[in-house]
Image: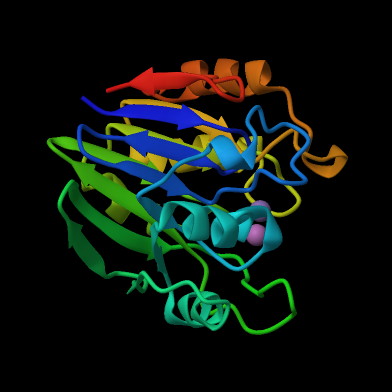
Length: 226
Ligand code: NI
Ligand code: MN
């Protein structure tokens, strides 16, 4: 069994029997976040790209929890320069094994700079393989045709941005669902700021009408078990 908790924006917690795995912990300064950053504990933190709304509280959580941070070499190096010691490099197309399963970094079409303006390497998304479950977290991306390759993996649940402006909007996320064909799909990266406000119910109706996947709309802090 795996428990997935969405903390708004792109922040996702995966809890397996043995590990707490956090992705893109943007908590401080996030108007939708339902939790204090001090209360978020993680054994592993995955960072998709360098933007502040994804790197977020990575540094402080990693320091408090002695978490292992998994990110591209540019973000890893930046965190190491801040004194974060437990680092695991990953790059697009590469997978890394962990005691709880495996994670692969996927392509994302976006940009990546660090809060001080320095180069943040390539942005990515992640596929998590835990037991027989496959979870795709697209993070920040526009639509791209190679999502069909991600679909070939047999995705149980996909987390896709729908906010538009910085990422895919609703229309392209429906196309993405038809490329990926996950059993379930959860909308993310919307509503946090004015520029990315969306009606998730409208999105859900379109997913039901135009795809074979089940839309799952979570409120910040809600969980789903697989
Ligand atoms: Ni971004
Ligand atoms: Mn973002």
